[in-house]
Length: 336
Image 1 (cartoon, rainbow, N blue to C red):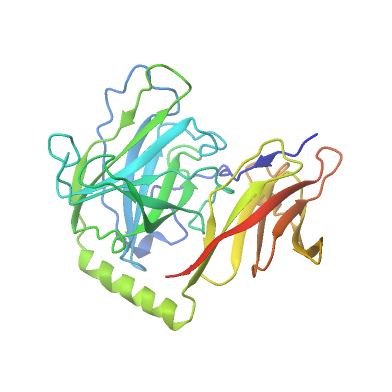
Image 2: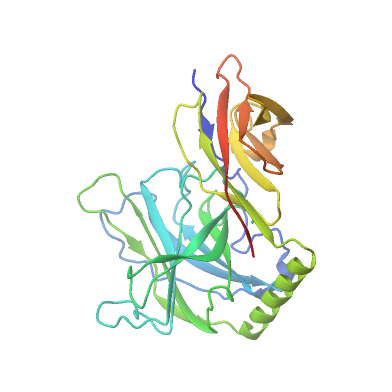
């Protein structure tokens, strides 16, 4: 039997909308926002409907805006590992509908896209991220990827695994004190008319905006002062032994060393490097059984190290799965 690569999905835990590793008494800003989501399209695919959005900022970092899209139902096991699901968060200013064809006068217009074939599904902020995209004045005009990251994770709000959350820098995107946002969601199964669910378009004022730039500068100074201003990114690709050929989103670490987290069906793995004409073992790993949605089958691995030469991961086979390999490629090192 060929090996199946899976991704981590949230175990059966229920958290509040504000659930993160930080305790509730450290919240700086948690406005109660609501979305008028009545009148959904009749042909909306089940699982595509949005229930609400959320905004959150912690005292520990006033520059970090946490945004959430809460679905009506639980996500599927691997919601971002196919081309069927399409959703995003829009951020804009100075006013509602500035992106429309008859206005085209947004001072700022950004979209946060969902990840593409992530190697894991974290349940708190980790090194998994997507880049925020910028539009010029109007929707989908001269769209370019920014260097601003949105670090994402999955949460449970009303149902198990029903929330996509991400954190981004207010200062990096130059978001002003007053800004607007909305989300959309659709599932394309090949139907002629793909229905889309939109949340309410609305604006809000962030009362602690003056603290954001200060926090950003302090963090940057601390990182540079510690000599950790190097970021190393790697990309994983399925190779021999897997039943699918997949490329995954890059994962980055703020150091000269790389780190990769993924889930696999066998509990043992080995990091290898190609040296002197052959693959040689660098380190053996045992998977964490409780980290994946089905701990009886899948195991989480986190591998890391300095990058020199070709690298791959060997996942050891057993009576059910044959030995399989993940190729690891460094995408780019760069400074903050």
